[in-house]
Image (cartoon, rainbow, N blue to C red; front, side, top):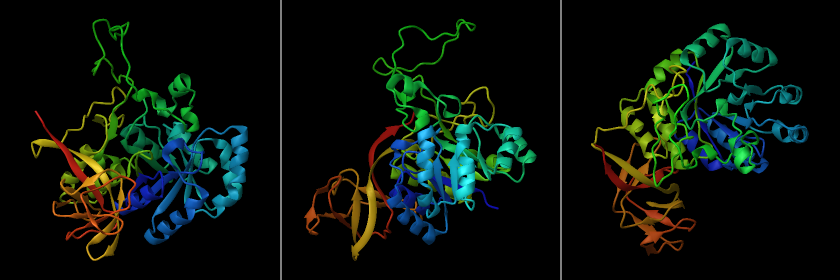
Length: 409
């Protein structure tokens, strides 16, 4: 069975993008019962659109309800059962075992997936979760490839999923109290303020007591550093190892990321998994989205998360930086397309169209039209406008412009 590519969806637009750009399945949060409460998430009113997308594509939808539930929240979850019965979700991703019997009683036809927040890292725990009724375990991010192989060998009927790309929490399996302590916003209730990404100032040298003379690397800018911020995960160069380990699903992090991010990252992994002969140029686009320094996480061992740093593309001698401008919607007249505008588009600035079926289309001869189809020099975010071009576009294509070119030394 082909390995599943699982992409994030913080809202309907991101769900549509994930499916368009190659995901086999998508995961999304529902109301406030998700650890990405601020990702937008889905309300009951969005589920009809999600169901329609699922019918059209035949792809799978997973609902993330992975907070740790209070007594009141468990009651609220039970009140939500009628909505969930009519929902398009194939599975529910949960951490709190208090939900297991509730779902098995009222939603026996839906699968249960164990969230990575449960920190399942060994075959004994995996076997127990299988016996409780879970069909899939999303392993803790500390699991190595060797761990995954051992767990799969011990519990072969259990599906295993792992994060393979995106942000990693600086705390064990995401169980962090820093946000709650500094801001009163609990990460374990889906309200993380990402305090580990903040800039901090060190007033003394950072030296560990038992390793005198060895200092942690600290890079400062304007006197501050992001010393608590972990590297991002990127396993696109190691997909064969991931497949061989016995994983059933490769998961991309990023429900709070942009449509642009979801499109380019999902597309790159799809091309790589499909062994597209040009997959390396799609890989290069991973460096054209917001990210921290890439690493292979703990997949190759527990000693450090940077034992296999990911090389930046150097084939062109420079690294491009892009500004996400929006997306192509519908063709309203021949060659005239409605737009979802996210940043200012100017006729004086060439654009690129990024497609799920085409790498890149450059365009420096397009025209911009206002809501009355009159030519204009620019269109701003939130405005109604159209783009006229002789290029072969399709709904869902991403529009971007090159921000600047940086020479790689």
